[in-house]
Image 1 (cartoon, each protein chain N blue to C red):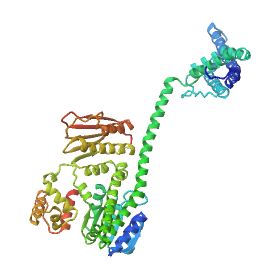
Image 2 (spheres, each protein chain N blue to C red):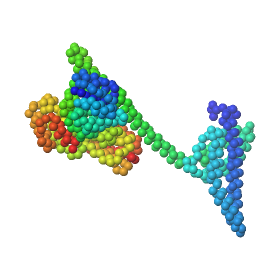
Image 3 (tube, rainbow over the protein chains, first blue to last red):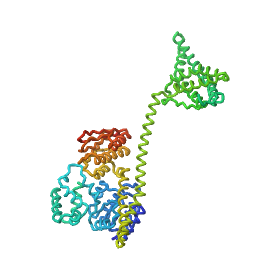
Image 4 (cartoon, one colour):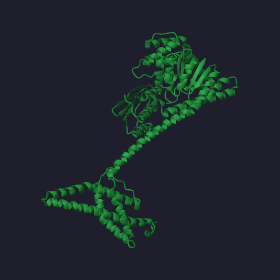
Length: 213
Length: 372
């Protein structure tokens, strides 16, 4: 799989390149800022771009803006955004325009190599990878909250769903039976007025759409 | 006075004599000039009052009276400047001019009139120096005190100026501290944090790669990796506590919603701030909410909290309410957090009140003035 990396720290850029190469990916370009990222994506047409949020010149949210430009210009390129901090407002910006083949992870997650590479593959395959912290923040509601209707267990299941876990994954994490998970999921969809669907991806979409409303 | 040099050998005595002689000349010059003017003015006024039938004379006298009245303040301030520079040159005494241009003219006129007899007396004593250096010195001290009282700015004016200076310097200190936090946050982010991520990543890779190694090696690697990840998390929390980057990028609303989301208890948040406040004030608002929530978590035994931030005019009002056990006071032993809140509010001229009856609920209200 062909990947472009945008990260302004030389240390991390080299480290990421090494880790992805070791993991069997082909890093076609590793660049230090958003302008060069857009150029590299246009030139190499990679399958995935790994993007740091905070890059020169303003060191604020260049990465998010660049990711949105890539999504509009090259919808085929999957996006994995890395951030030193998880901020709800960045995540909603990103997810409002890109709801598939997209990931938003805390930068620390690169330390867990296997999980990180799994997330990367999931995103490249058209899925989503949201940091548990992002999901937690998205679940905080400001107005009257239909989520209050969910039991704590159902909220737990919803969080895992939003992170992109399958029913099997939820089952293993919560150590419950498959039928129990199915029951929770059905209840969640019922309580949130969502039509039940089959794939993990559409479940996340539905959840996010609901959360972003 | 103990340890004081004999007056003859003291430099100050010579300076005092030099000052007294200069004071004699300056006082006489000023006094004669002002005296002559006042005399001419008086004569002209007297002539006008006792009557003269020649219209040309009347016009001339009226002209003289008005001219003298118009010129005298300038002359007085010119003489004052001269006297101030005399005191500076001969004594090294720095006497500031009044803040308002042409302010305190009557005081200064009084000084110049007093300067004539005072100058005569002082000069005479100085001439009699071998006999009376003490008197010259006394004269000089009186002279300086008089000049300070009558030529310098008034007490009220000085205080007003001091308050203004203090307010400005405090605002500068608050802004500088804020800028410093941002700088440290940026430095840590660009430096230590990246390096630590890299370290944790390398250890993570090593852990995967050396899975076939003997148990002690794997254990050591795993421990190092776990430690690095933990250090990374702690550093991230620390940096965020120092200054949340999102506050710069996205403003108070976004920063607070992140804060509410990270809290270990449900926090309902309402932010209604159509116009952003100054960055320094927003930072204070953020930290007040942050510390208030931390306080709720630590002490209140609450099940939920509510944060409201609204802006009305030039006032940013922050309310943090919880349904805990109440009884929070800034004076209590565990109240360092609350005292910190009050200090933060006060640093930008804001106020903080705590309403926390035993049994709850606790309501913390902060009001911060903000000109945008």
